[in-house]
Image (cartoon, rainbow, N blue to C red; front, side, top):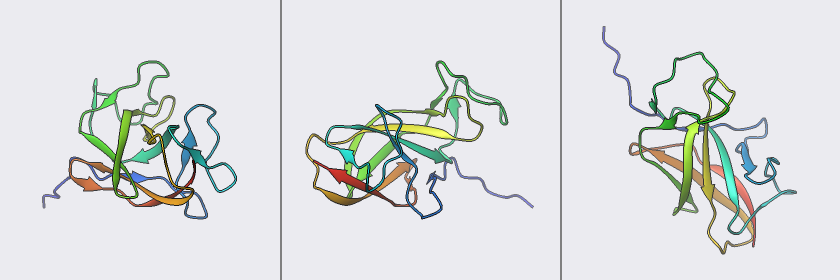
Length: 134
């Protein structure tokens, strides 16, 4: 029996409370209601299922700390259904099976909770909450 495999099936990792594992790109602090993302900030997203990378990397081996392999497929990110800039999408340095997507938020965002998700190869990830502050 053949099992069809998808090129990508993106998923954003979530914590025990269901919030996305999103980090401030400058400080590495986990983003939450007490530590919201700010306008024009870089946000790092921990994800899975983004597909092939280049150069190819063996399964089960931690990604290198320097020059981690880049995701081959086109990675898009959305905040409240509006596209945001994807700075890079790689294997997460030093980890096995994790991807790291870094995005830059727009120069002006509304205060309060927002909805964030990724799209890879035409497939959407789960939606996660991101707390924002202008």
